[in-house]
Image (tube, rainbow, N blue to C red; front, side, top):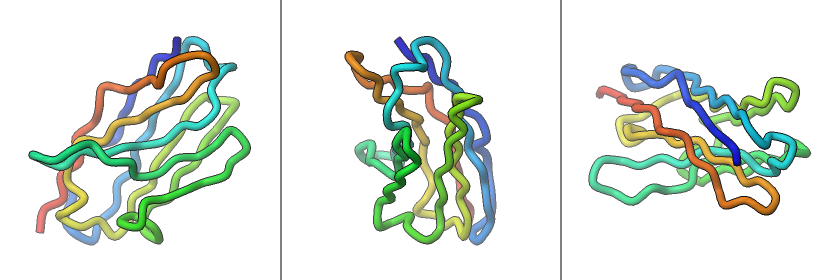
Length: 116
């Protein structure tokens, strides 16, 4: 199994930036893709971005051009740099990891609040 711990959330004004980090432990050698989902208040959790073990990235249209996902395989971390933040980016951000022969693992979530 893979354990994930997120950090880096907080309160920021619209137009500002935040950087989220997620550290993986456990069966890390089996991890393929890692990424982030987010859940706005009263809404379903939605995919935001992911990165494969080879470094291929994909982004939801709502964050493309503003968010950048990166991964350090040596440190077993995945980061999400969020720029030009908007109030609609407010929510709980969850890190995930897909590992071979394991169900998807989730972090506990970190709150991001963007004030207008």
